[in-house]
Image 1 (cartoon, rainbow, N blue to C red):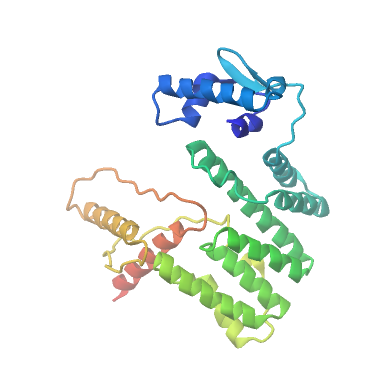
Image 2 (tube, rainbow, N blue to C red; image 1 turned 60 degrees about the vertical axis):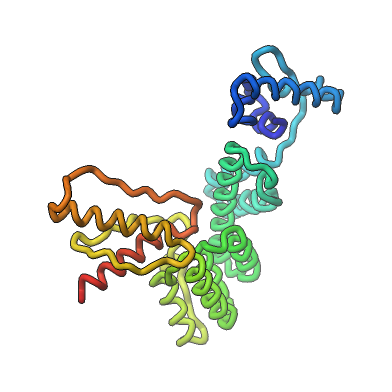
Length: 304
């Protein structure tokens, strides 16, 4: 409750909304009763709370005159400032400030819906900040600092293939070809074990160049980036290939069933009813790559 109110210090929150957010599985009566008990407990445990937490019969909010410093708000301000800044050194300073403010995930011990949603938003913005500062450092040839941030990006999401590409590129550009080659094998193993897919063409191409060239030169615009998302269109005439994805068998079967259904409708074997497949999830967990894989497999089948 305190965290939510601190994130919205200038907006009075209705008791009904707070009760629903904090106890979504309870009845309205029980949730509002829980809220009253929490407020009463807080006032007894922290008597000073009466000075900065204001409540009436309908709303609860922070006192407008009470000084308040919230790291999430400071992080958001730094990210927004970087997005709006055209001067590269100033933009880099804002990005590094945002990254430094992000010490750990938002309320990691809580799984309320609003907490999970806020946590995912902040992780996404941290990823954007890391991508941005890496690009700026790379242009300056500051490989060690860029590599450190790229390692941070990979720790944020170890299934983000674009992060592997970025770190491989930086290792290669800095002359550390051995680390770049080792990282490719880590990426390949993880994608196979967790998603049941192979690295993308761009990632394999980079690996091949590293194998052949002792001093490779890579350009960031040649490789997939975190925000570069392109729709994958299946060929018109396809046959669904039964190739299971390790660790993602359920999702893979659903995609194949959808594709087969679309094919049957296209050939007039079933009624022409609207159909839509939506893949949802955090950036980097393999949504686009699963569609790429079924597209590649069906194209190979078509060419036989």
